[in-house]
Length: 81
Image (cartoon, rainbow, N blue to C red):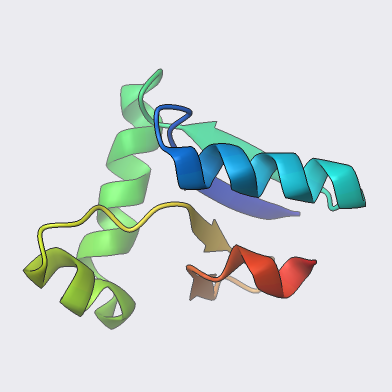
């Protein structure tokens, strides 16, 4: 099952969850605004992945962050629609 790291304080994360739920896509949501363990996991992914280079340079967070079942990472949740 894919994992989604994000925060319900983020409008993009809220929209992502609503649309995935509406289409029945299975996922595990890891909210890092409620759990520091989830934040540490997300930061390890973000800080070690070149996908986030420009996001970090722009001072952005990079959520929702989706980790597919094969371990690959994407920021494009709409590909699952």
